[in-house]
View 1 (cartoon, each protein chain N blue to C red):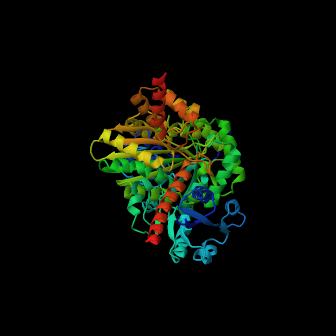
View 2 (tube, rainbow over the protein chains, first blue to last red):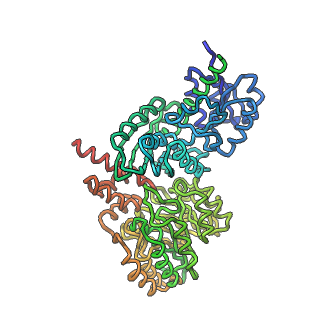
View 3 (cartoon, rainbow over the protein chains, first blue to last red):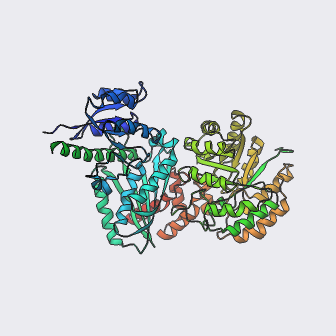
Length: 298
Length: 342
């Protein structure tokens, strides 16, 4: 039996904690460090209870232990502002980075669309776009793999309670990074992203609308089939990813109305936006772990 | 009510909020025609862009006849004394749009958020203030929370650098007492240099009454729209509001007779959708629904064989907020499914 690949989670907030719960179930990754900046934080306390080593000194606190504890993968669940310095430090130790912030330093990864392409490229840093990107880019790609998409637009609506301070402080990063992901990974020639935060109680489940304008008349049957397959792929890691309505065909417009219910590991089920991010981040890291294991076995 | 001797700054919305009933199809030439006439009538502030503000061009809200930059570059240089403002809704527009607008000569930036989500505006208000623009925080759907809660959000925007804070009745739901309570609290609790503003919709014909209540409670800036051209049943009809203000002895600096001519001869004939209190816009006001949903709901109702008032009531029940236009077709499809299952 091969040993699990050791990993560190940078960021002890909601995303980091939810990711921790998911990673503890992984068969090939073992999360062993949780990195925070506040010694009083709930997230660090919880990680410690779950048997992880913790530091409240940021990545600097992790640095001296990376080699000793054989940490080979890190997730960054902090914010775009500090990602570059986090990455610079772990990179020195040859650690692979899965970036859950919208910093977009490394290439974008949306697992059902381009995870396979990442294999063998051994990127040091991959970026998970944004939560809205993870929830919508697969559907843009489902259309663009059938026929050229002139324009892709996504509207992500999340509950107030699931929009953390990082997203709020830098909401422009969300719209910019998501729009670029719609183009680069989704395959639309031009991308646009809109985010809406809704404070309704009880909190609404994450909703996503995807509009594609195709260059030629939409090939309806092929698009319906492609979308069905794509949704099944996403459901492998986010079972609550569902098509509520659509696809609607209206001239050259193809629209999907999606709902994303989370697994409810640490975050409530309505926070599908966070769940799809952590689930995609774990899936990506597992692929990297497989590569590491293969390289070590060889 | 005694408003004798008060001064108020009027802000025209016809070339931004009025883009909703026009399906964002006003041309730069039409904007120049309206804006120069408003300028000549002494209207001090005029808002220009897509109905959903900078960056609003989209499938979701509608693609405009020209880009924000084209509109702004057309209108700004034509102004003799009026200033041009632009609206920015974080989540739709970004600081890149703000820089572009500033570069076009826009002097007033209004950063709009849902009334409970002011903390998404820090970047944008911060940049507006840094560029020494007249920077306004615009709290939309302000009927959805109480005055105290609204004040907390206003204080965030004040801290980010806004010099004016708006109570925005996006649904035209408020009654004069609702306006009074909010404006009064803002006036009492915000810093003295902060101006307080009110933006009304005329969905229940309360635009003028609510705006008067706002002035009485201490608001110094009021939004209206010539010929009432705005989303839903429109904004407070500016020419009628000016007439009322002048009778009450309020100083506006606006020539009422010229303004009436702009409404009658230029704007009203331009309207492709005649803005009025019809049953749909009245439903918006009554049910507390974002005014720009109006035409989208009418279209969805027609397409799916439903009643537009039913769609609007459902959107109100779901507590949708500004910008959720994508919910309209989704809700219509749900209603159609439920209808055919019966």
